[in-house]
Length: 529
Image (cartoon, rainbow, N blue to C red; front, side, top):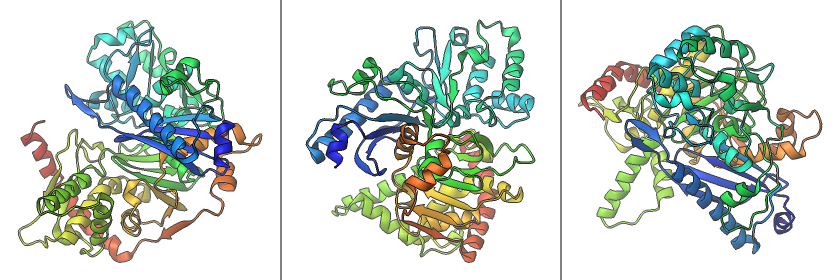
């Protein structure tokens, strides 16, 4: 059956550019992943900027697709030539400005950069809307404040997903969810807020640039819209072997937040999800607007344009990965060969044997700055008193707490605002070991957490679902209904409610964590990057 679908060009391809991995999945007509490919990569820190080079982006895309194509051949003994639809997703935010010939004017500035504080503060003030440092408009305005010469040459700027989509289709568009991470969006019109565009143009009027903001922004599309077709040059870029046929439609390119919401069926009001990988963020679809503007909470949208409260933290699993790599190196020194997946599983389970408050340990996993806690840079560090209970169980519990501690700061604000939450889904690598991160997240946010059998599929599967929705939905069928009735009906899932003792332990840990933030700031000052 799968082979016939592949040969007939009825499969759907989703590709997502994550922080450490580019992943491609091919799904069938029952939304099952029938083939996949991936490419590991890392950002570079160049001249004080976190970036990925153009070459890394293109070669990573090609290698990821080649691995998918190889998987298709191995499993089904057929060459992948035709695809029913394609979706492109990537890390949200960041800054990719281009000149009139679509030459990149400065290296890609990713979401991870925390160098736009003055711009973000000024825009937040004049917009009366929280403008985080990582948002694309904050990057643009900071470049203006810095008097960077490239700004005068800008004809277009976009996100990573928007640029890759352009390479394949020639269309300068974005899905509304990704667009809402460039600048504020009006959920009624599913377009940029025109009043804020006018404010921005007035703000920079004295600079005399040859462009107005709307002229250089990508056009906004909603879930279900057709966002162009795969051009011959796009097909050749994706598959240099020349086997892939052009002509298939592409859905609007989306950010990883939107694909995470899609992959967890968290599109309806009062639903939410937590995506946990290199970064961690929560997305709660709002029933009503929040009363106040909070720097800890971003307001973005679902791929269908509904407003979402988002708490975004730059660091999640990187420090855990570093420690586990160290432990594996030790076992190799001792002459033992270990399986990485097994090491993760055993150490995560060990965390559940630890004391509820981690026995006095406090861990900062800050590989980068964290605006939620007022840090422009980060220094991973472990703090403990001489008499604390230092053992593997407490240590691992502290590492998992650290992956969520900054998120918890923002989520406590939502709790105080009485934001209604019926269900929260967890997805991403942190949840692969059953009964660990899921349980501790429930304690962190004081709400039930559900993990579905697709928790490990992530955003590549989510953008594939959005591409499928574009070509298979019934007229007037909402994205919410499409997912609920077709994709997730009958899907296996597990739900845990917060354990009161875990909640109390996490709250005690957070008291110590908050008191130690000055030590983190001192470490940043004392250890200059």
